[in-house]
Image (cartoon, rainbow, N blue to C red; front, side):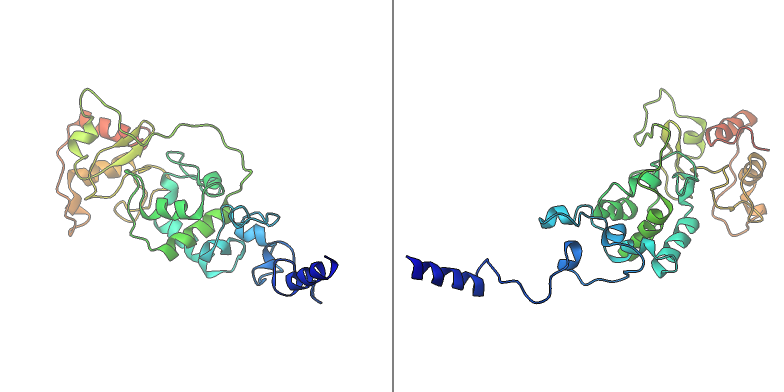
Length: 265
């Protein structure tokens, strides 16, 4: 028995599941499988998340960040700069909180970006829910946005509780906005989505500092500039395709109030 046991052990050491220790010890965790990079910036899990102490691949890669999204710890990286530019250009803060700033109409991205899988985050950006505009972004752009959101947010940042409604309520009669504007425009209000149109711009957060300054003269929108625009859009923008909208004073007040600008001047 002894000679046969010795042969078996020798075979396992050479080509089986038992391997003799090599002269160079293998690194533990992520670096046992992956080549190290950016060692001066942070540890593997700081950029890629995951669980470096786990031996099973699915656990080690828990909520793994990869591609451009993993560049959120590189302050001078191209992905981070592009992500910031896209967030500002697309005016994401008109609905979302990013870096503790923004309108709290939709999901607080400071927290959610640290909780969800990257594939789900990319899908939410590229194939959004009903009231979020479809920006036509590709996967690389979506990953750049995720990188910026991760750099701005924090997994431990506290937040006040608030309710986000993505479904439409059933009203007995359409509101003034739905009757006069809803066929071309929509916006996300405190009570949920209003309007069904996508021909015109999404008006979520129109009167807030986070909406793009697209009023005549590249200024922020106010109740007065909105009234002037509705009365005669082509007076300030001759090539616009939007026709004048004849609203009574009462209808104008209702539409302005729905959009959240009742106290604007």
